[in-house]
Image (cartoon, rainbow, N blue to C red; front, side, top):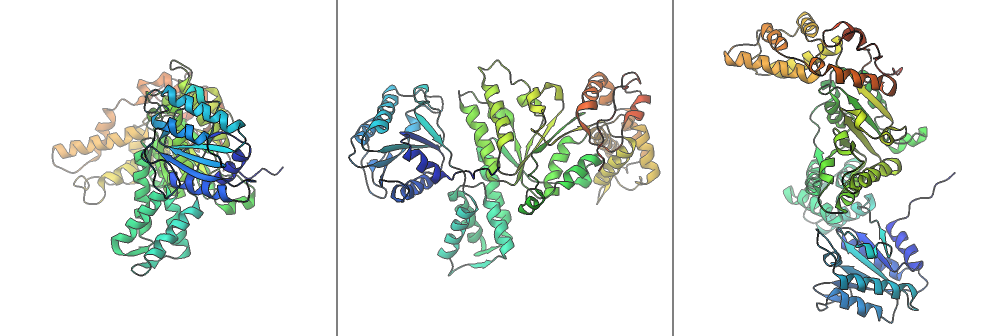
Length: 543
């Protein structure tokens, strides 16, 4: 069965205007794009009767685009709009200041003026439509059934290319453009997720620096995007700092991710596969879940955005849902991208109550988006307490797979020790010299650190380096053994919790490591053999 192609913003406007929807609301910072679309629709052949376009702002009142006007209160302007004798699209700005925003209540006279205009526009002989444009508005209850919300997506590749062509043509006499077709495509992709104004600013900054536009300017445009994402306050642009080689063990998870590299590209459609939805990684704290998320961006070569669910919830009624929608819309605009939610149970683990249903609505918004998102945004979520998440979050179809990360095996600990020692003793480090990272030494360290997490191994190396620093000497093997002996690992202090997580994962998750750790822990001091008999290492995938 063929699915319908989603309607564009202009096509949606045409349908709603034809259907005599009296009041539309467009939530955007890009008022100019709304005006451009309204003018194209008003004079286009799709409407049986052409429309005028009249704007309203607090400073200029009702006015024709490009012409002067005089200040008028919005309720008076709406009363004048109702009396218009020609079919008109009224595009009103600034109404959010009067209909409730930033915690301020709506003005009753303003609410009534919109209701009166809605009634007149719906049933009047002369077809009018009111389009309210606002960067953010929480509708009063009285207007919820009268107003139709229309989504204006962030600019697509075609619109960004138009801006790029415009600024290049305007400065052609004084700049040098040195871009291959592939570099030009990457430059435009770097600008995706920006408004047209922000994209134009980014291209202008790149040109102004050296009067050239070349591949080196891609980083500058990405920096502009990073600033924009930071200003949203909800998403954080994470710069990749490592590779999968920095992650010790977790071979199953690494192979799973490597096989899906590039699956969002158009060529993948020839294999009849959809873009991957996401992965949920749960397990013992300190065993590489977050590190995998950050290194995955390097593996796939995609921007990594971190969503802080705590920032989504604010004190203003209705703004939490708006925050979530805005964050998800931005993640899609930047696509293909990776959306990372760290310790997701802290944000969605108590979606059931105590806050008048806000958590439940925000959670529902996120679930619906995960199920229906059309742009390739890969969600990587990490959780330490998987049982705290609601069951509907874990059902098949939300994530492509759920992986369990256990304490590292001996082989993985050997790899982690090598990574951490190379990191601390490499280069010009004063600590290097008296300790050789050979297989025998690493094997001894791995044996002694049974039950340690990757984070605990990293801290043991740091502690040993402090020992060497305190005596201003080189690091030796005794320092590392002493650091191990002085560390009480999580496998001891939280043995019961760890075994409970293992019990959950034994039938519900895929093991992130390719070797079961059961044999090690059945004989270690971290937990008794009886405690771990239910642990089977998770389902093994034949990669």
